[in-house]
Length: 129
Image (cartoon, rainbow, N blue to C red; front, side, top):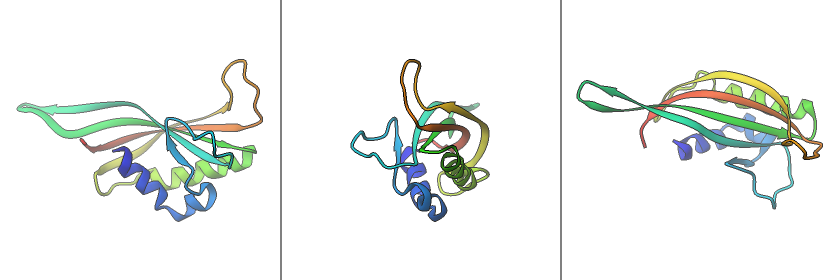
């Protein structure tokens, strides 16, 4: 699922016009100081079953954290991300649904940073990998 989702996002010109190819799983490479950027995390993945065993379907929650220098740039990038994924179906994806959005400081407790962060959760129904 992760490679297919990455390819979908990198193929979306309105999104890459804002974030370029700065879409990573887990964390952003420290060597890349450009912004805004997106960090993806698969929070969970629940397989479904039928009477004869496991199906080929998984429901995953993916969290996308969008970081930027300004609140406006962060919100613009998160809006472009939502426009690509919300309601999408195709390929291995049966459907993607926006679940929640929230604004956070970009730092963990005790850290100091000037970045802004918007976190967006999607419920993604897909074929098992």
